[in-house]
Image (cartoon, rainbow, N blue to C red; front, top):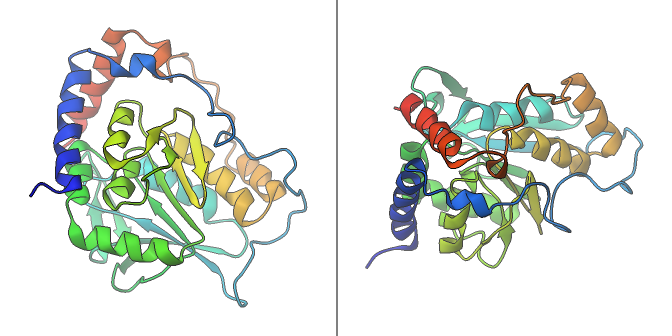
Length: 272
């Protein structure tokens, strides 16, 4: 019998090829935030600079899942944002502790603890990755079981980019709105989720972020949830996160089919 993640793995592979050829399903994606489910922290959030809400006097643990072929910025961007939030401890984890290669094969990030050593976390963050890394993890029963167990007790479960497909393969997105990289959005439907374009989408305790750089936006929103808006605003300033790119082609509806195809080819060519 074909399992859900096996069907979706095949779909992702087909979809990546289709977009690279310029068929451009992302042309239907819309920019900005889905009303009521994502975007920016609410204006009415408290602004006090209070430390993160600790449980029983202990720090709040954020577990960032690393796997062979993950995308560096998907993990490191949120790490840089959250690691300085008072009362929060961020830990890189993987199936085995030690260096974990990114999707380019030219950079490794060290996982401090194995999945076995981190059976629970207040916040789970699953980064996206290259096609091979993402689809392999979607088919990794041990990792998916760990994600489900941690999710059962987490306060927040989050993803960046194609990390949403991994959450979907774990069965966590059924019936929910979610976002991911624009090239993978339509495949969220294979997991019963509704693709909702936006920098991030919050649905219950699950927050999904769009492609790569959107992880920083999501992490700032999460910082406000873990602490308050004042701390999140201060972290944005500390990071000097004030995007002003030289080109206005950061979302698919601002690019033509040729540019979308080139973007995906550049991603594929850099992957191992």
